[in-house]
Image (cartoon, rainbow, N blue to C red; front, side, top):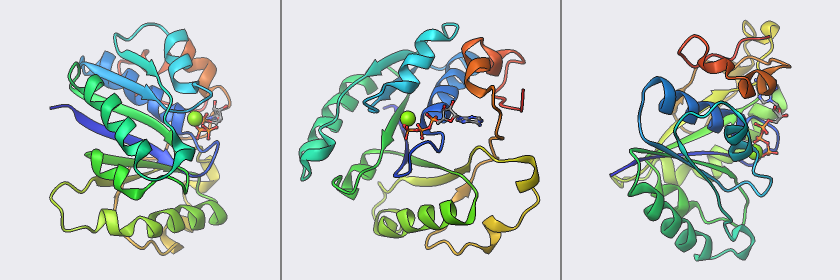
Length: 206
Ligand SMILES: Nc1ncnc2c1ncn2[C@@H]1O[C@H](COP(=O)(O)OP(=O)(O)OP(=O)(O)O)[C@@H](O)[C@H]1O
Ligand SMILES: [Mg+2]
């Protein structure tokens, strides 16, 4: 049974696709695990980046999810696509921009929900609101509830010592991933194989 990770947030441009692509590259190349990426982003950013970067051996799929149809349709479709993909890998990473028309039940399909967020006060408040709306998922008594991890992304050096994160009140508890620093060259370097240069996941300012 594959371990399933959903990388999601309602906010655009917070680094979902960058995180998804780097995570897949790290798991596949550095840990040598059979990994599949399902890219549900219509723009196909993470799948394109992984196709352009030096090959890491992961299976890369750019699929459509009927996000706007609401109801259970997206969940049925996601389940089907995930079942097919999960039969051939140990870890499945899914890149999805969350939309209000999606039912929160979709998150129960995953073992882990990873939420990238920028660390400005406004962005953290938006992330807190997103977590609040899905609090019932992360606090559900079900043994199948997903683990929740929040990953600060595009963090500026001067933000490393600021207290915006600790000042924000979050409605649920979560694991806090190490910050991904803002690096203008993040994507360019990735395409040249940068995160793998030292054999580990690394996105430092270029
Ligand atoms: N750590 C970083 N440093 C600098 N630029 C970054 C970093 N992470 C992401 N970016 C850039 O920011 C832009 C948005 O990132 P990305 O596409 O990963 O976000 P997203 O949340 O997937 O966006 P969307 O909502 O459009 O799908 C991209 O151009 C990407 O290269
Ligand atoms: Mg994206």
